[in-house]
Image (cartoon, rainbow, N blue to C red; front, side):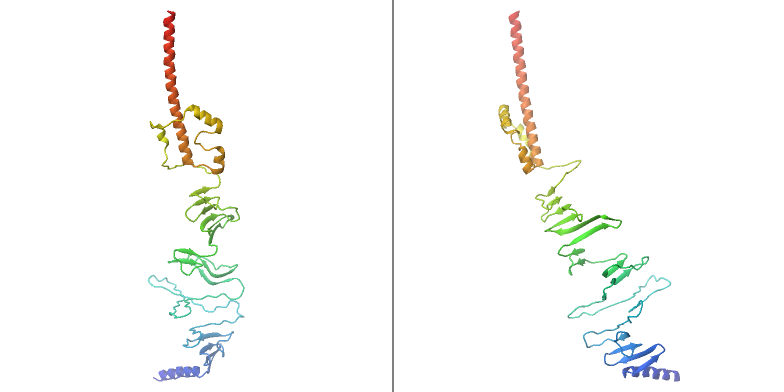
Length: 335
């Protein structure tokens, strides 16, 4: 009972000393209570100063209400503001460990930050660093808000340049662009970019876009102004091309088809230097050609040529009969 009374009196004295702005000396310094700023200092008689380590209790008044704040002396070689380590020599299979848990309330105005990192000064560094086992802490050569060495998992949408992402990866920028570059060869790099109401895939520093998908669905290869579903500025090589068309030249074989006489065809060719209905060389040069239409025209000319051959064959057979009759008549006369 005597031990309990002594302990109780000792703890009560500590509380009274702190509340009365008194000091408790320790081998390494003092514990100081300051009534002016509701702070408790460890190793300082003036909590909240630059060179102190501070424990600041929460307050219901003022612009900021801080539960725990630390200020580390700038003379330290590697100062650590807050360090936590949760480790078990024997791994736990049915429990979780948390290094830092931060929960914030629902402020009716302003902002809520569960975890806030701010990089000070102008030297290279990162406000938030994440490293998985097997990876070392990086030496950063720039200033980063966040740096991660290891896989990063996001369960919901990610927004770059937007606070309301609508898809898995939502990029919003004056020039939204993603760049791909091989780590072992800086010459092998590509980028994709939203451009002029469309979408491009291109190589940096190369004139002209490799692939351009225009608003509306037209695709250009080597051109950023495709006027049809697929426009290619260059050579196309393929093992097979299939063209679907509703046009068919088989009407040439209908009984009511009016076949142009060969004499008229001859006259037309002499005057125009190309077949009837076939575009001229100048038209092909300036306007290009529709493969479906041209193929159908060529098929039509082949079918017309077939009809001409059939007619010539008939004429040839008739001439043979007439020659044979003449031969027979001549033989009868000579006998």
